[in-house]
Image 1: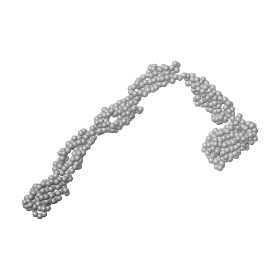
Image 2 (image 1 turned 30 degrees about the horizontal axis):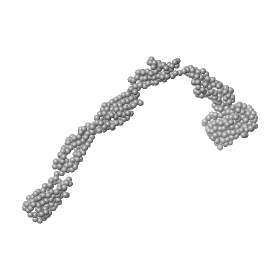
Image 3 (image 1 turned 30 degrees about the vertical axis):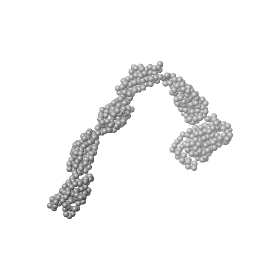
Image 4 (image 1 turned 180 degrees about the vertical axis):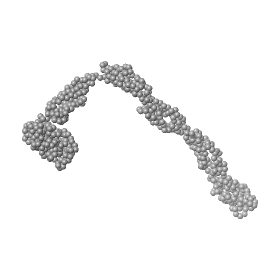
Length: 595
């Protein structure tokens, strides 16, 4: 399995390169000592140890981390290795050497003290029978190439010897000397010295000031025991501050010391002044504050001045004792707003609902106030009003961009409400029959100029007062449509009845003597229903002589129109009939039969 990984890792290392936080080779190895307890560091990724050393059992050396240690008391040294991701790590150890430099100079080509290339996530390195002063070099590899944190610690239970901490970096002193305040910027410089032992062989030494964040970075290689620094441009504000120094390769090798910033050496008395943005034609008011006395560029000496409403720049000098400051005020001008509006409905009949829209071009930030007529007001860009009063209505829009900067426009007859026509007419004569079926129409409409008549029989007219002749008996709905010049309309419908003429003539004598003159007693009629007719003839004693339901059949004087003619006498008739309209009639009378 490790052979397969070896090929994959070799390929990855050709494609990428990373810088490990620990020493990348023997010459940059980090010191380790027993008193440090557990040392932890992020494992490298995508790196490979340099060629040359005898890596012993390590078939590959991915992501190396180099350490060295020096024996303080003799005996066995046991080191425990583990990692947070529980992935495969390995190690190899060389020695003994007289110094770290001697070990690196040897090329590490000699035999290994201990070595492990197992797939375990924990390892144990043993240095047997170590002698005081001996130096050993330890290489730990991240075989998995995964992100993990490796821990290195001496096993106190298995170790009989100890390692020296005299090889570990230690910061023993840090000074901070504030310089004098510089006028008029109120800044100072901070100088000092960092004193240390066994500084790291790589990385940086960073000195940071807490009050301003100013830093100075010193790169390796470092002086053996001291480093000086200077931080410039710090604020002189009498604040309590501190300065810190830390080695990036060994963050535990650090120190912090306190100091006080010097008091300000220049007293400033800043003044403030407002600028003005006014409507064209108005004056601008400028006000300064923060000083006892003022002198404006126009010669005024008060805190508040009034200047013409034109574009310009005004400076003011404020003084309080010996303290002096200058500020600038700018006057800008904007044009008065426009008061333009449109609406969707400008005229109508009886009532008009209108939606208004104010033109906002060039009116950014403006307010809109409306007088809409009919004692109604509105605000905003889009008011609405329902007009119900006939006549012209004035509309006023006031657009404002601040106090005194307003524009007002009034249209004295913007909305028109026209009176609606009221349609009406009379018909003469009041009763119309088919014999005299000419009807005369009198137009009584108001507020109208155009008319259209529908006479109910598919006929029509556009005359104001027309007449019309009906051709048939019946009930007709006559409708008049009245409209005005403005398109307002009204209509009215009146029923007109054309009656039929009812004629029923009954003679009072007839002569059935066979001379071909007046031989029959007939009913002569017009407008009777042939389905609802009855004629009865009685003698003076009440005997029925004749009956018929046929309008066209008459009595010939014989009993039931059969046989000899009855004697000359006066007979009684009953006539029952129904008009075509459905109205019933009964007529009783006398007829004389003459021979």
